[in-house]
Image 1: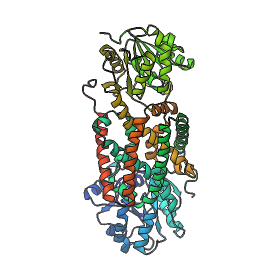
Image 2: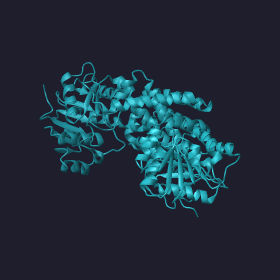
Image 3: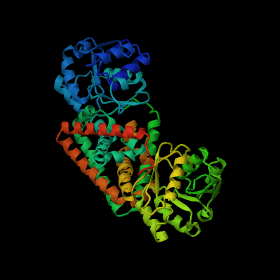
Image 4: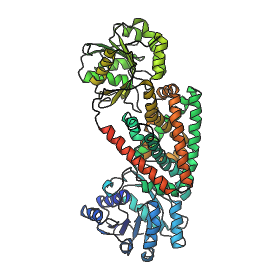
Length: 301
Length: 301
């Protein structure tokens, strides 16, 4: 069984996720050789000098030659171009994985580029975002006790899954598995919809007359509620475009629930309101418990 | 000109706001005598022993006899009952203020109880909530650099406004003034709508099949986005029932913006999405700036 020890890992995209993966692996002393690939040599040089990577290149194809594991940590709509660029140099044993927030679209793109899904391709998604982005926001502890979801297909190599899983565990994460479609539905509900709502709320409020004044009277509740509206526009455009159907599905359910709530407000139905708020209190309390609990047997699907 | 030094302050409701006001005044050494009024003697005793108050009573009417300032820090729909109870014992110089999150409803209730708005009634609202509630969540620093909005009427006594303003400043807050109607509109947008959206989102998600599993894969983004869904159900029922019109008004604008966004998702209009996300990034950045900036001349309207 191969281990990540001694393996040559190429991380394409040294932003928040790619940069944090490199930093985490290095700071936790996993003995692998990390090459960072990016467009900006100054940032790559900085990553090298900080000891986060062992080598760098602005050329993904050159960097991927002889790689054991290639991690694609770029916005969703950039994955296809990178795959086309590196495909000619990938060895038969090279494992490719990604860190994108949508999985069906990535699987489709891989299929298009390779004419099928290679057994060594492992779709992955670390649930460890932030409203901040870029290498300067990356951290060696970003993945500590955070979850990484892998969505291998039936024919995906068990060894490849084990190696990618080992890499994320070495970076401090818990690894879980689920199906591609289920992933996209769950993430539409728990991540994509909240981001959409936060972006939209800030935009609605900023269109109010004297919006400066409106924000002047806002406090910590609004600050936290809208934190994710400071997220990277390109990354999120890509996510919404490539998971539009599931996102619109859960958005429609949500808007329908808002309309019921609106009726209760206008009907002055205090009992319905309080029942709903109590349910929400309870659900959020168990959600907080879940966030704090370490998952047992984390890599069993 | 009267000052709060040496004055007898009665705080009705020793929860998050009332308790924090008492603690802040005591810890900042303002030389006033504070009586706490509540229903639970054990909590009042605890407040007394911690030095947050000088005396307590479970009887609002008895406590308000001879008071210089009465602060009503109870849920909106409880304000009327308290006012009716204490009205017979209020002195002609006693100043009454409140801490409710809606102001028109409070003004209407005061009008009903007194047959007009007494010149010594100063409607007020400290913008310093939390998803936590009760005396145990109160803190001497809750109002530090937070804003308190006063919404005096044209005939409200300038001395009464100055004294209430002095009390909140002594507790560490900045004091601002605005009109009653404007307050309710601004707060509907920046506080009431976000709370409604957070309660509703947690409820929508918890109604998904296998909702436990859904929350299992959620991360910090959802935790912060839904923080305010842990807020007190009674307090928020009262706020929504008494500011329903303004809340529904801004909710309708928001839902209409969501529907435009939905169209953009289905039309795969990446340019429209990115333009909106960039606007939201920018608006939130200036909102954060505003939160950090100390307001100049804070009590000028």
